[in-house]
Image 1 (cartoon, rainbow, N blue to C red):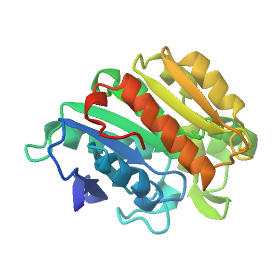
Image 2: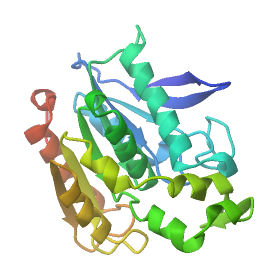
Image 3: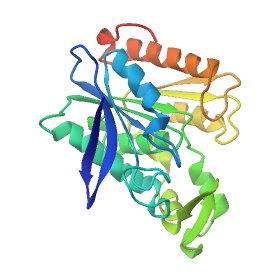
Image 4: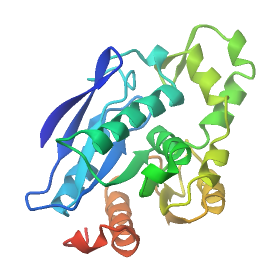
Length: 256
C-alpha cells in the first residue's frame, strides 16, 4: 500500500494505492466512497482487488466528510465537485509517468456510485467498466423534495447530521443522472439491497434498464451498505462479474 496526494487546484486529493504483490496488468480500479465517508469505506474492496491481482485506489473526496484527508468543507461539496475530484484522479492515472494505466475501471458506493456514473457518462471512452454499490440515484429526487427552489434556500442546511451548502442542491438539480447513463456503453454492474430504506432498489432497477449494458444484482434483505453475509454475497457476485466480463478477468487468480 502506498499513500498518495494528487495535486488538485490549490490543494490535493489524499488516497491509498493498493498494488498486487505479483506483476499486475496495466489496469486500475478507482473506488469512490459515499456521502460523508472516506477512503476507509472502500479500502476493504481495494485490499481484495489487490489480493486478486488488480491495482486499486481508494481516496477521500474534497469536503466529502468531516474526516476527509483531502481537506475542504462539506458545505462546499456537491456531486459535481466530487465528479471534478474523480476526474482529477482519472487524469492522473492516465497520464502520470510513474502511475499510468491503460485501462481504468470505476467502483462507487452510494453517492460515490452516483458520481462514478456521472464521470463514466461524461467521458465514456476513458472508462473500461463501472460498478455501482447501492448507488444513490435517488439523491436528485430527494433534493427536489427538500428544496424545490435551491437558489432561494439557506446558505447551509443539514442532511443526516452533515452540514451542506446551497451548492449541493443547486448542482444536484442541474442535470439528470439517467441521461448520463445512456451515454455510457461499457459494462456496468449494480448491486443493491432489497431492504434499502435510503435508496429504494427501484432506482437501480430503472438504471439497469437505462444503461446500454448493465447487470443488476439484488441482495435479498440487505440495507444501505453490506455487512456480514450480505457483504460476502456482494463480493462473490462482484468477482463473478469481473471474471466473466472485464478485460482483466484472466488475472483474477481466485474467486473471492
